[in-house]
View (spheres, helix red, strand yellow):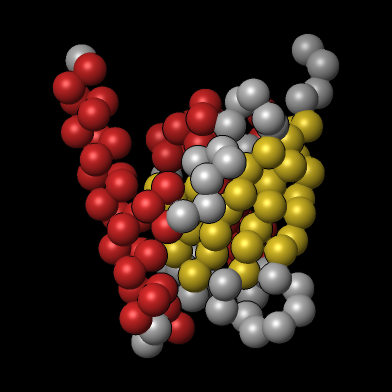
Length: 124
């Protein structure tokens, strides 16, 4: 099977000016939670820091879904399959907890995860 290269764009929200977005090309078959955690660790984050993906073409905080494992990664790939590009937002837990705006983003994204779960249950 031919390699299907995706672009993962990591948005570093709490690292100050410069190097705010890092693009990582990755074979679709290698996109998984473990590999994404490895990338954010190389970017100076911890495994416990927060990752979210945004719905394609939507950059409001309510469009973000928290990535907590491979099931969220599969949702992320499914939602972005037509463009083969994903925007991943990273927040340092310690910094995010001291910023009201970023707490709102984390809370809204958490709510979005719950809404998606409820939608999935209703569809079954």
